Amino acid sequence: MPDNDEASVIDMGLPAADFDVRQFARTAAGNHRDELDLAAYVDAPLSRETLRTLVYLRDIERATMSHLRGLLVTATHKDARVTAFLTTWAFEKFWIADALDAVIEANDETLALAQAPISTHGEHTIRESIVGNIIGVPMTAVHMTVGTVDEWLMQAAYARIAELEPHPELVRTIERLLGVKERQLLFFEAQARYRLLFSRRSRSITRRRLRSTPWPIGRLAQPKAETAFFFERLIASSPATMTALDARIDTLPGQSGLSLIRKASRA
Image 1 (cartoon, rainbow, N blue to C red):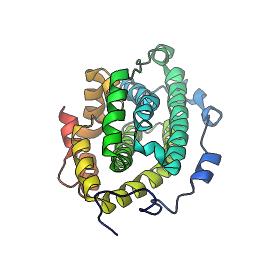
Image 2: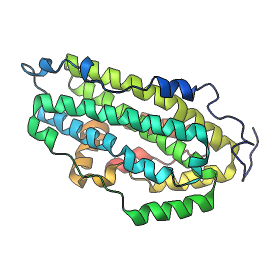
Image 3: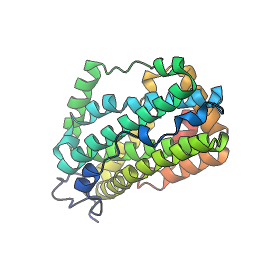
Image 4: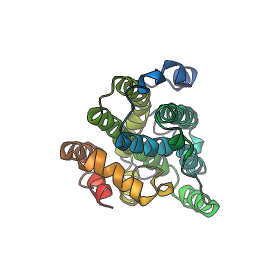
């Protein structure tokens, strides 16, 4: 594998070559409501703690469109496969949020109505566009790596919810949503590893960006108390989960020793 500081997408070949983006788009997972047995919560409602984490995750999933706007004003948008993937990914995330909303509503209609506002300041998007286009192609490595780390964190969070409250219907729903996320991760991770290996500059820029990224993506639209609760209940309460996540990040080329999840849990 070459180790270039500057390279065009064409020079790089085809990252995530085994991932069929067209098939992914054709088979995108949409509305999940028909698969949910919401009546199962009538006699066995979820705990307040679980509902609180589901509300947080719902709003984080909804924040994807705000995050996507920042990605598609950079050189990342020039890669047609990446753009096609990201738009389909955002579509799937919207319906994941909708499924969570259905579960929340079945347990507490008031919570379902209380959704955090999602806003992207125009100046942030403009600044990201300027900076991203100056950096060029390495920004795609940043975006694919950020997506990879965020999916690892989110998958671990969903798994912990099911572990802490093994309600049969909730577990079934989470398994369904994790299946959607696993397919998304196939593209994110393969792209990230390829692009990080290809360019020394990509590794350096990505490392700086990972350090400054607020985890999980969408966190800034959430009250600090809710983020603190999310980490305390799902991540910090399981040292093995936290250690495993940081160890997984260490395997990304040039990204070892960051302790991102441990630091995010303390922020």
